[in-house]
Image (cartoon, rainbow, N blue to C red; front, top):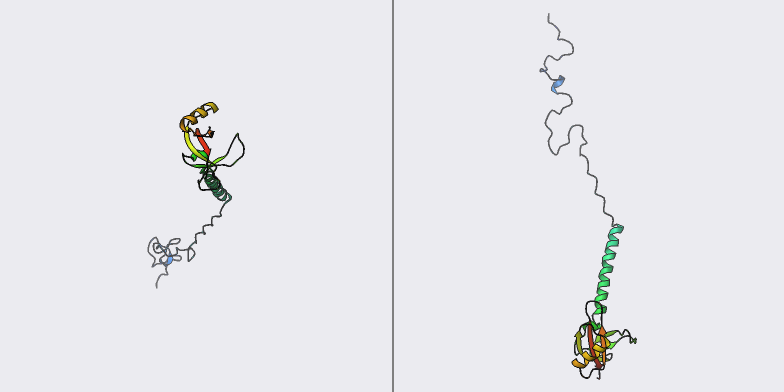
Length: 165
């Protein structure tokens, strides 16, 4: 007569293992990169798509401010390009305003129909009416008009006479 095996135990199982040779809760083989892990979705998690950056109000505002500053700089450069402070001896001038207190002189080409005056002398410094007369008399004997500019980075005196074409 043979004795029956004890109930609840596998006579062929090795010590410390669960039935059928697999420990519970662990994979039978070490995980391999690129293959799904036990209990994971077959393709793995898809990373969320990066949201597109919206062009924000701040960016648009900064671009508009930069463009405005550049525009103002270009406008100032163009408007000052032919001002009296750029005049040199021999240049022709045109009087833009009729105010005697603040004439708006600008440099023009001598063959232009706008040419009214010619620069006989340009003297740097600050001058009063009396000293301007004497300085122009010293520098340009046949001057007819003087123009002084003060303030800003340059103070100067222009001695002018009518330009005859």
